[in-house]
Image (cartoon, rainbow, N blue to C red):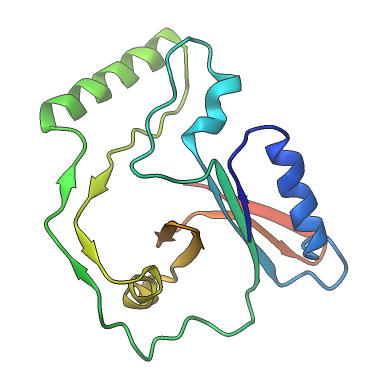
Length: 172
């Protein structure tokens, strides 16, 4: 896995990592790339001086891992040791409604044509990220983990996949 904490050359470094791990090579047809991109990478593209949204927890700016989709799946024999407490939202109902109205206004002005309005959820957690991934096994979770951080995602999004000469993505 590649873990990046500096925005300098991040996309070139990700491409080099993918090449080094055979993603674009003959025989790499059955590989998928799991990728995490943090909010901090948006700084060069931001049109205002407003800072990027804060990350919900300490994370790298980017992380990527290549895996064989025909390789062994997650070990689902044990999914014990996971305890999740009460969920808390980052926005109240009123704040979220105000965000929706702000998005509608931006679309109406022609500033944007599409927005993914994000609500972070958090909960106290006991257990390991691998155990959580096993608990979510029926959703086909992805796990990226580094020193002191982990992302377990059951999102239906596909960042990048290759089958033969075709490379595709399927964002939400």
